[in-house]
Image: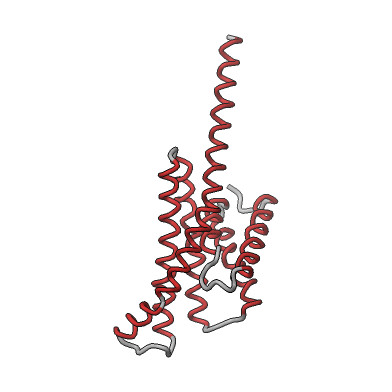
Amino acid sequence: MTNKLTYRDASLFCLLVICGVLLRLWLRDYPNVTPVAALALLSGCLFRQRSIAIAVPLSIMVVSDLKFGGYDFFIMMSVYTCLMLPALAGPWLKSRLQTSRKVVKSGLTIGASGLLCSIAFFVVTNFTVWWCGSMYPNNMSGLLLCYSQAIPFFRHTLMGDLFFAFAFLGSYAVALQWISYRKSLLAGILTTSEAKFN
């Protein structure tokens, strides 16, 4: 397997980054509703090289944050990390979607992936806000207060992650099933043709 960047990979990379940046800018008035985690999952399915898959959400965040502006370094790093890590689950997710023949099973896999992304983002980023910021007391009550006040934002995160996960990964799963169907159909035709000539 070569590590050379192919034209296909470069085209997909640009398409995903442009799509992510435009959607993030368009949804700027809806706090925490973004397509970035879902696109990270999708990039993990599409690219064999993990570095390229991780670069998709990272590029989306860097480019769009040029418009939004920066914030606390450690909080920003926790946000970026949580949005890049789903790309690492791509190979597992791809194998699950490829082997699944039932719509319900694929739907549960996609839904669980979106849910885990939301939970990880909620837990890690709010812990960082509590640990590095000055908004909450540096004790257990302060941590619990931080999480409790972040629940409305978690709802937005969950809504965005699930919606875009089903939109992007659902389309990807349908494409995988269609390709599998076409291959099996072609194999059946070739087998029938060989049987006739033999």
